[in-house]
Length: 191
Image (tube, rainbow, N blue to C red):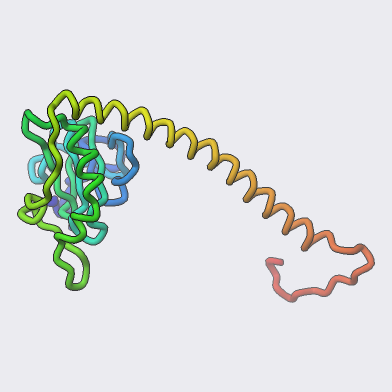
């Protein structure tokens, strides 16, 4: 149910519509609300459209990558969209599927690249505690994952500053050597 991208088919938009999820949109631990491509109204009639709080699992190539939406979304054929029954809190289901990435890979067929069809997806077993315990687990994981994301962001900033310092040090040392050293033309115009 992937709308065609052949010339003359106008099913997609870069500016808005229903977010079109691809494998690169998965594994961020944040809800998917924006993507680089969207389905327009014509595309939504052809593509499969999922309600908010759907969990998405890559089923071809990058098998086991997960994500979830807070808005109505659609996805390409490399992704299974999974909704849970009423006895499973949707975000617990998302975390449980994220935790079962290795099982997704183990259940996939691999010839040239790993493929996990929807029937094989159905064989994946998830622990299902009481609904209240699921919500408690989600609350704990949301808090801990948020704290980890904040720590990563702080450290990422430090890493970027250190990388910039390293580049500046290299540039300085290469271009500001001993003033008594004679420079030789490299004969490379852009240098």
